[in-house]
Length: 561
Image 1: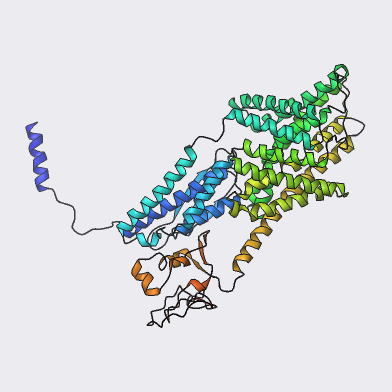
Image 2: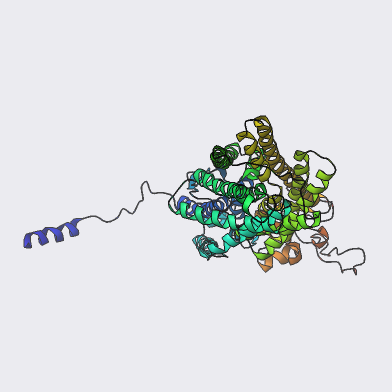
C-alpha cells in the first residue's frame, strides 16, 4: 500500500500540466452559436409539434415555426409530414448545421390550448426584446440573457400544456349529445328525434370510450359507433308498430344521421384539402387516408347492421327530407347549436363557442337559401363553406380565434350524415343499389365542396389582408431584426436618430410595419411631420441618417426596403 502511494505521489509530481498552447480545440464562437441556435429551434419545434397534435393545419404550423425562429434571427428549413416535424438550420462559418426532429404520436383536438399556443407564437414574434442569435456569439452575457428569455417562453408553453382541460370528459359527452340534438332539429326532426339522437350519442360515446381504453384503432371505433347508431334505427323500425307514435313523427333515418354527423365532425377532410392546396402533399395524403379509412369504417358499420336487419325481415324505410315540422329559422338555430356544441366538445372557450354558433347559423342559412332556389347540393354546400372560410380567416386576428376552429365548427351543419345513411340503405336494397352508389358519390362531393370552399375562402382572405397591408403608400416595411437596432436600442441611439416610441407598431409574423411615416421624425431637419395642421417646429441641427429609417413620406430606406 505504501509503495502504491509513493508511486502515485511521484506521478503527480513529475506529471505535466494542461498545455498552455491549445491544439484542436473547438472555437468558442461555434459553441455559443450552436447552443443558442439549438435552443431557438427547440422552442420552435415544440410550438409546431403542439399545434399539429391539437389540430392545426400544416400551413399554420409552418408559419408558427418560421415566426418563432425569425424572431431570434435564425433561418431554417422546415419539413412537415402528417406525423413528424423536421427543422434544420444550415449553419454558417461558426458551426455545423443543426437539425431537430419531433414525432407527433397523438392527435386530439383541443381548441383552447391551440388558441393559446398560437397566441404565444405571435407574442414571441412580436416581442421587441427578442435577442438576435448573432448578438450572442461574441457576448456570453447576451447569450445568458437570450437563454433566459427562451426559458421563459418554454415555461409559458409548459404552463399551457400541463394546465387542466377546460371540461371533464363527462361534459364532452353532454356537449356531443347536445350537438346530436341540434343536428336533429336542422334535419327537420321533432322533439322525439332530438331526444333519441342525444341519447343514442351518449351511448355511442360511452362505448367508444370503453373500447378506446383497450387501445382499439380508430377504424374499428368508427365501425362500432356507426353500428350502434344504425342498430337504434333498426330497433325503432321493428318497434314502431307497437309504439304509440307515427313513423313521420319519429323517422329512424334522422336518428342515424344525427349520430353520423357527430362521428364525421372529428375528421380532417378540410385540413387535408387545405394542406394539398397550400403545398403539403405528404401531409395532405396522410390526412386524406385517415379520412377515407374512418369514412369506410362508418360505411362498414352501417352496412353490417342493415344487412343483418334485412336478413331478419325488418322493413327498412326512408323518410324524405321534405318532411319538416319546423320552419327554416328553427333549423338555423339547430345548426348554430350543433356548431357551438362541437366547439365545446373540442374544449373551446364559451366565447369561441358563441362565435362558432354564429358561423354555423350563417353556413346553414346560406345552404337553405341555395337549396330552396334549386341549386345542386355541391354548390349549395361549397358557397356557404367559402363564406365561412373568408369570415374565419378574415376575423381570426381581430377575434383572437384561429381560423381552423371557426371553419371546422362552422361547417359542421353541412356534413352529409343523412346522405351517407341513405346511400347505404339503398345499396343494401337489391332493387336500388345504383341509387345508393349515387347517394354516396353525392356525399363525397359534398365533402369536397366543403373542403374546397373553406380552403379557397381562407386563401382569398389572406390575400386580401396582405394587399390591405400594402395599400397605404406611406407604409414601409422592414424586418424586425433591422428595426431592432434602432427602435429598441438605448436612449442615446433613439435620440441620435430621433425615433419615437409610436413608430414601433404593427408587429406581426416576424415583420414590423410602420403604419404611418408621419410618425418618423425627419432626421435631416429634426422636425416631426405630424400632418398639415401640426404647429411649426423650430429648425434643428442636422442629425446623421440611419439606413433603416425612411426620412420622408414616399422614400424607401437606403437598403431599398
